[in-house]
Amino acid sequence: MGMITIQAPAKINLTLVVRGKRADGYHALESVMQMITLADRLELEDADALQFTCSDPALETADNLVVRAATMLRRHYGITRGVRLHLEKNIPAQAGLGGGSSDAAATLLALNEFWQLRCPLDEMRGFAAALGSDVPFFLDGPSALVQGRGETVTPIPHQANCHLVLAKPSAGLSTAEVYARLYARPAPDHLPAHPLPATQAMIDALRHGDPATAARALINTLESPALAMLPALSMLHERMLQQGCLGVLLCGSGSAMFGICPDAATAAHAAIDLRNDCPWTAQAEFLPA
Ligand code: C5P
Image (cartoon, rainbow, N blue to C red; front, top):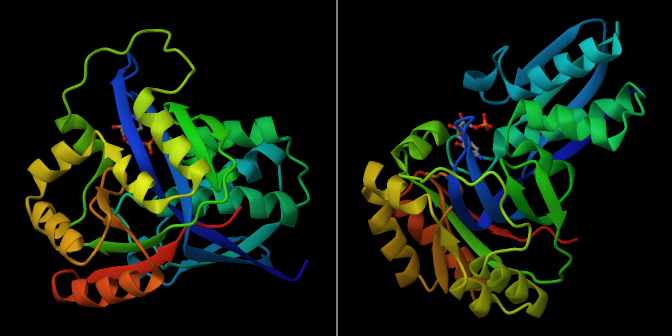
């Protein structure tokens, strides 16, 4: 096979409710996750060995999730061929946008084709969950209810689109550190599968398709520990509301924030204006189904 290219989209969590801390140290979650039009690009080319390059040299390491995903498949299937993987980064790291997780899922999906592995989806989900809690979502999408540690993914069919503005302060946040700041009660062994009222409100808003209703249903349990760690986020939140966002929320464990805008022009204008406060801003939309 010559060369193939695959997009690895970012995600936002339209809701993220921590339901408790599990015995294994992870947190039981319930989240409505949504892929967006911001994306990294992964290129694959035939090679004798496993090679990895990245547009951001700081991410060009052996423990990059792209390399770990490729190594996992190669070992499992006893593949002797190599591959040259090049990652073009657009999604900032330590932002809560799932960039690394999406790159990992894209690697699994692309190599399954490239090496003609015919890996069953169940097995693929197992590889994904072993690479990171957010990785299984990226095998599905573009919109899903995510539960458990992140491995239970139920697609949400909807036609809603929202214009978004994204902004990240220069400081990033570590997911593990934000979770460590959160006080969470022990999670019960069995949580009901039906969504919480707050989650259901977002699912209903998406099915209805109205951005203002979706903006009112935004919720993220990790926002308060993240704000405590990075007070600049409160000001950013305020600025985004002043720029005309209908609702603003921390992306995952941060440190990026997203705002739902009434239209594309508001999002574009806000993305430019916020550049005065933030080194990275972007305009995006929901990734269509
Ligand atoms: O699974 P992953 O390695 O991406 O998770 C990074 C960190 O985030 C974990 O080490 C854990 O501290 C925290 N985490 C959690 N509960 C989850 C997902 C992640 O506590 N459901």
